[in-house]
Length: 270
Image (tube, rainbow, N blue to C red; front, side, top):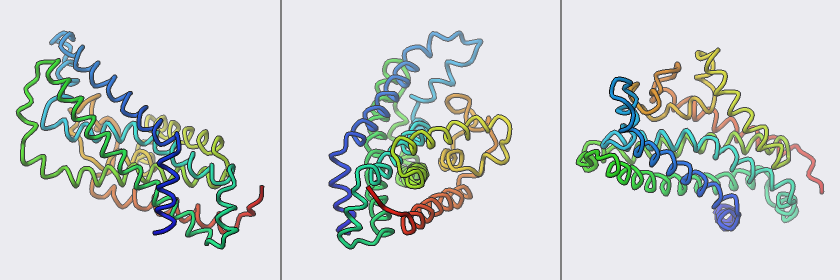
Protein backbone atom coordinates (compact mmCIF):
# COMPACT_ATOMS: atom_id res chain seq x y z
CA UNK A 1 0.00 0.00 0.00
CA UNK A 2 2.88 2.36 0.76
CA UNK A 3 4.31 1.93 -2.72
CA UNK A 4 0.88 2.37 -4.32
CA UNK A 5 0.26 5.63 -2.47
CA UNK A 6 3.73 6.84 -3.42
CA UNK A 7 2.99 5.96 -7.04
CA UNK A 8 -0.30 7.87 -6.96
CA UNK A 9 1.39 10.97 -5.55
CA UNK A 10 3.97 10.73 -8.30
CA UNK A 11 1.44 10.22 -11.10
CA UNK A 12 -0.80 13.11 -10.05
CA UNK A 13 2.08 15.53 -10.63
CA UNK A 14 3.16 14.12 -13.99
CA UNK A 15 2.18 16.18 -17.05
CA UNK A 16 1.31 12.98 -18.96
CA UNK A 17 -1.65 12.38 -16.63
CA UNK A 18 -3.32 15.72 -17.29
CA UNK A 19 -2.35 15.87 -20.96
CA UNK A 20 -3.81 12.41 -21.67
CA UNK A 21 -7.08 13.32 -19.96
CA UNK A 22 -7.38 16.67 -21.75
CA UNK A 23 -6.63 15.18 -25.17
CA UNK A 24 -9.11 12.34 -24.71
CA UNK A 25 -11.92 14.64 -23.62
CA UNK A 26 -11.04 17.28 -26.18
CA UNK A 27 -11.27 14.81 -29.07
CA UNK A 28 -14.49 13.39 -27.66
CA UNK A 29 -16.02 16.87 -27.42
CA UNK A 30 -15.08 17.73 -31.00
CA UNK A 31 -16.53 14.52 -32.41
CA UNK A 32 -19.76 14.43 -30.40
CA UNK A 33 -20.60 18.09 -30.99
CA UNK A 34 -19.70 17.82 -34.67
CA UNK A 35 -21.98 14.80 -35.01
CA UNK A 36 -24.83 16.63 -33.29
CA UNK A 37 -24.39 19.74 -35.41
CA UNK A 38 -24.17 18.02 -38.79
CA UNK A 39 -26.22 14.81 -38.56
CA UNK A 40 -29.49 16.58 -39.40
CA UNK A 41 -27.92 17.95 -42.58
CA UNK A 42 -27.36 14.48 -44.05
CA UNK A 43 -30.10 13.64 -46.60
CA UNK A 44 -32.64 11.14 -45.29
CA UNK A 45 -32.15 8.81 -48.26
CA UNK A 46 -28.49 8.31 -47.26
CA UNK A 47 -29.44 7.07 -43.79
CA UNK A 48 -26.21 8.21 -42.13
CA UNK A 49 -27.75 11.01 -40.12
CA UNK A 50 -29.97 8.79 -37.99
CA UNK A 51 -27.09 6.40 -37.35
CA UNK A 52 -24.79 9.20 -36.23
CA UNK A 53 -27.44 10.60 -33.89
CA UNK A 54 -27.41 7.36 -31.90
CA UNK A 55 -24.37 8.81 -30.12
CA UNK A 56 -26.58 11.51 -28.58
CA UNK A 57 -29.77 9.46 -28.26
CA UNK A 58 -30.55 8.08 -24.81
CA UNK A 59 -30.56 5.55 -23.24
CA UNK A 60 -28.30 3.93 -25.86
CA UNK A 61 -25.86 6.83 -25.60
CA UNK A 62 -24.65 5.52 -22.23
CA UNK A 63 -23.26 2.35 -23.79
CA UNK A 64 -22.01 4.11 -26.91
CA UNK A 65 -20.14 6.75 -24.90
CA UNK A 66 -18.32 4.04 -22.92
CA UNK A 67 -17.53 2.16 -26.13
CA UNK A 68 -16.36 5.43 -27.71
CA UNK A 69 -14.04 6.09 -24.74
CA UNK A 70 -12.63 2.58 -25.08
CA UNK A 71 -11.84 3.21 -28.73
CA UNK A 72 -9.84 6.34 -27.93
CA UNK A 73 -8.77 5.24 -24.46
CA UNK A 74 -7.01 2.13 -25.75
CA UNK A 75 -4.54 4.29 -27.66
CA UNK A 76 -4.13 6.79 -24.83
CA UNK A 77 -3.84 3.94 -22.33
CA UNK A 78 -0.95 2.25 -24.14
CA UNK A 79 0.83 5.60 -24.46
CA UNK A 80 0.28 6.45 -20.79
CA UNK A 81 1.41 3.03 -19.58
CA UNK A 82 4.53 3.21 -21.75
CA UNK A 83 5.32 6.74 -20.60
CA UNK A 84 5.13 5.80 -16.92
CA UNK A 85 7.02 2.50 -17.17
CA UNK A 86 9.68 3.87 -19.50
CA UNK A 87 10.39 6.83 -17.25
CA UNK A 88 11.29 4.46 -14.41
CA UNK A 89 14.31 3.39 -16.45
CA UNK A 90 15.27 6.64 -18.18
CA UNK A 91 14.87 8.77 -15.05
CA UNK A 92 16.54 6.23 -12.76
CA UNK A 93 13.66 6.04 -10.26
CA UNK A 94 13.53 2.25 -10.47
CA UNK A 95 17.24 2.09 -9.63
CA UNK A 96 16.66 4.37 -6.65
CA UNK A 97 13.82 2.19 -5.38
CA UNK A 98 15.86 -0.99 -5.72
CA UNK A 99 18.79 0.68 -3.96
CA UNK A 100 16.48 1.34 -0.99
CA UNK A 101 15.84 -2.40 -0.74
CA UNK A 102 12.50 -2.59 -2.55
CA UNK A 103 11.62 -5.79 -4.36
CA UNK A 104 11.86 -5.18 -8.09
CA UNK A 105 8.67 -7.00 -9.03
CA UNK A 106 6.72 -5.55 -6.09
CA UNK A 107 7.85 -2.08 -7.05
CA UNK A 108 6.73 -2.56 -10.67
CA UNK A 109 3.40 -4.16 -9.77
CA UNK A 110 2.64 -1.46 -7.20
CA UNK A 111 3.41 1.20 -9.80
CA UNK A 112 1.03 -0.44 -12.24
CA UNK A 113 -1.73 -0.61 -9.62
CA UNK A 114 -1.29 3.14 -9.14
CA UNK A 115 -1.46 3.61 -12.91
CA UNK A 116 -4.62 1.48 -13.11
CA UNK A 117 -6.25 3.58 -10.36
CA UNK A 118 -5.43 6.76 -12.26
CA UNK A 119 -6.86 5.20 -15.43
CA UNK A 120 -10.05 4.34 -13.56
CA UNK A 121 -10.40 7.91 -12.31
CA UNK A 122 -9.80 9.18 -15.83
CA UNK A 123 -12.49 6.83 -17.16
CA UNK A 124 -15.05 8.14 -14.66
CA UNK A 125 -14.21 11.76 -15.48
CA UNK A 126 -14.38 11.09 -19.22
CA UNK A 127 -17.68 9.25 -18.89
CA UNK A 128 -19.27 12.14 -16.98
CA UNK A 129 -17.90 14.60 -19.54
CA UNK A 130 -19.11 12.39 -22.39
CA UNK A 131 -22.64 12.13 -21.02
CA UNK A 132 -22.72 15.89 -20.51
CA UNK A 133 -21.58 16.38 -24.12
CA UNK A 134 -24.21 13.91 -25.33
CA UNK A 135 -26.92 15.88 -23.52
CA UNK A 136 -25.67 19.11 -25.08
CA UNK A 137 -25.49 17.39 -28.47
CA UNK A 138 -29.03 16.09 -28.10
CA UNK A 139 -30.23 19.62 -27.45
CA UNK A 140 -28.36 20.92 -30.52
CA UNK A 141 -29.76 18.13 -32.71
CA UNK A 142 -33.26 18.43 -31.20
CA UNK A 143 -33.21 14.83 -29.95
CA UNK A 144 -35.39 13.95 -26.91
CA UNK A 145 -33.43 13.18 -23.73
CA UNK A 146 -36.22 11.45 -21.80
CA UNK A 147 -34.37 8.13 -22.09
CA UNK A 148 -31.51 9.48 -19.97
CA UNK A 149 -33.43 8.57 -16.82
CA UNK A 150 -34.27 5.02 -17.92
CA UNK A 151 -33.80 2.91 -14.72
CA UNK A 152 -33.00 -0.23 -16.71
CA UNK A 153 -29.87 1.24 -18.31
CA UNK A 154 -28.88 3.21 -15.21
CA UNK A 155 -28.74 -0.05 -13.26
CA UNK A 156 -26.20 -1.47 -15.72
CA UNK A 157 -23.80 1.49 -15.56
CA UNK A 158 -21.62 0.13 -12.72
CA UNK A 159 -20.99 -3.07 -14.69
CA UNK A 160 -20.35 -1.15 -17.92
CA UNK A 161 -17.87 1.14 -16.19
CA UNK A 162 -16.13 -1.83 -14.53
CA UNK A 163 -15.79 -3.54 -17.91
CA UNK A 164 -14.47 -0.33 -19.43
CA UNK A 165 -11.92 0.11 -16.66
CA UNK A 166 -10.67 -3.46 -17.13
CA UNK A 167 -10.34 -2.93 -20.88
CA UNK A 168 -8.34 0.31 -20.61
CA UNK A 169 -6.22 -1.19 -17.81
CA UNK A 170 -5.35 -4.06 -20.16
CA UNK A 171 -4.29 -1.64 -22.93
CA UNK A 172 -2.27 0.29 -20.36
CA UNK A 173 -0.59 -2.93 -19.23
CA UNK A 174 0.48 -3.66 -22.81
CA UNK A 175 2.19 -0.28 -23.06
CA UNK A 176 3.64 -0.74 -19.59
CA UNK A 177 5.18 -4.09 -20.55
CA UNK A 178 6.51 -2.89 -23.92
CA UNK A 179 8.25 0.12 -22.36
CA UNK A 180 9.68 -2.09 -19.61
CA UNK A 181 11.19 -4.44 -22.21
CA UNK A 182 12.52 -1.47 -24.18
CA UNK A 183 13.69 0.35 -20.99
CA UNK A 184 12.71 3.58 -22.69
CA UNK A 185 9.75 5.97 -22.82
CA UNK A 186 10.18 6.90 -26.47
CA UNK A 187 10.77 3.33 -27.67
CA UNK A 188 7.90 2.05 -25.56
CA UNK A 189 5.45 4.69 -26.81
CA UNK A 190 6.51 4.22 -30.42
CA UNK A 191 6.28 0.44 -30.28
CA UNK A 192 2.98 0.57 -28.42
CA UNK A 193 1.41 2.88 -31.00
CA UNK A 194 2.76 0.65 -33.77
CA UNK A 195 1.18 -2.45 -32.23
CA UNK A 196 -2.11 -0.59 -31.75
CA UNK A 197 -2.42 0.48 -35.38
CA UNK A 198 -1.02 -2.79 -36.75
CA UNK A 199 -3.71 -4.69 -34.89
CA UNK A 200 -6.47 -2.40 -36.17
CA UNK A 201 -5.14 -2.73 -39.72
CA UNK A 202 -4.99 -6.50 -39.30
CA UNK A 203 -8.75 -6.64 -38.77
CA UNK A 204 -9.17 -6.24 -42.52
CA UNK A 205 -7.23 -9.41 -43.32
CA UNK A 206 -7.21 -11.72 -40.28
CA UNK A 207 -10.38 -10.95 -38.30
CA UNK A 208 -10.59 -14.44 -36.76
CA UNK A 209 -7.08 -14.03 -35.35
CA UNK A 210 -7.14 -10.34 -34.49
CA UNK A 211 -10.25 -10.73 -32.33
CA UNK A 212 -8.04 -12.45 -29.72
CA UNK A 213 -5.42 -9.69 -29.69
CA UNK A 214 -5.33 -7.15 -26.85
CA UNK A 215 -6.81 -3.97 -28.31
CA UNK A 216 -9.55 -5.66 -30.31
CA UNK A 217 -10.60 -7.75 -27.33
CA UNK A 218 -10.55 -4.69 -25.07
CA UNK A 219 -12.90 -2.88 -27.41
CA UNK A 220 -15.41 -5.75 -27.30
CA UNK A 221 -15.99 -5.92 -23.54
CA UNK A 222 -18.98 -3.58 -23.90
CA UNK A 223 -21.74 -4.88 -26.16
CA UNK A 224 -22.85 -2.41 -28.82
CA UNK A 225 -25.60 -3.00 -31.36
CA UNK A 226 -24.59 -3.57 -34.98
CA UNK A 227 -26.53 -0.41 -35.79
CA UNK A 228 -24.32 1.61 -33.45
CA UNK A 229 -22.36 4.73 -34.21
CA UNK A 230 -19.90 4.40 -37.06
CA UNK A 231 -21.41 1.20 -38.40
CA UNK A 232 -21.30 -0.75 -35.17
CA UNK A 233 -18.86 -3.36 -33.97
CA UNK A 234 -20.47 -5.98 -36.15
CA UNK A 235 -18.25 -4.87 -39.04
CA UNK A 236 -15.44 -7.07 -37.71
CA UNK A 237 -15.43 -10.52 -36.15
CA UNK A 238 -15.47 -10.24 -32.37
CA UNK A 239 -15.81 -12.40 -29.30
CA UNK A 240 -18.89 -12.19 -27.13
CA UNK A 241 -18.67 -9.57 -24.35
CA UNK A 242 -18.64 -12.19 -21.57
CA UNK A 243 -16.06 -14.57 -23.02
CA UNK A 244 -13.86 -11.67 -24.06
CA UNK A 245 -13.33 -10.83 -20.37
CA UNK A 246 -11.18 -13.97 -20.06
CA UNK A 247 -9.06 -12.88 -23.03
CA UNK A 248 -8.64 -9.37 -21.60
CA UNK A 249 -7.64 -10.76 -18.20
CA UNK A 250 -5.14 -13.11 -19.85
CA UNK A 251 -3.46 -10.21 -21.69
CA UNK A 252 -3.50 -8.04 -18.57
CA UNK A 253 -1.96 -10.67 -16.30
CA UNK A 254 0.45 -11.87 -18.97
CA UNK A 255 1.75 -8.36 -19.59
CA UNK A 256 2.39 -7.80 -15.90
CA UNK A 257 4.11 -11.18 -15.54
CA UNK A 258 6.42 -10.40 -18.46
CA UNK A 259 7.21 -6.93 -17.10
CA UNK A 260 7.92 -8.31 -13.62
CA UNK A 261 10.12 -11.18 -14.80
CA UNK A 262 12.12 -8.89 -17.05
CA UNK A 263 12.61 -6.36 -14.26
CA UNK A 264 13.78 -9.09 -11.88
CA UNK A 265 16.47 -10.26 -14.29
CA UNK A 266 17.46 -7.01 -15.97
CA UNK A 267 20.66 -5.18 -15.22
CA UNK A 268 19.73 -1.80 -13.74
CA UNK A 269 22.36 0.81 -14.47
CA UNK A 270 22.59 4.52 -15.17
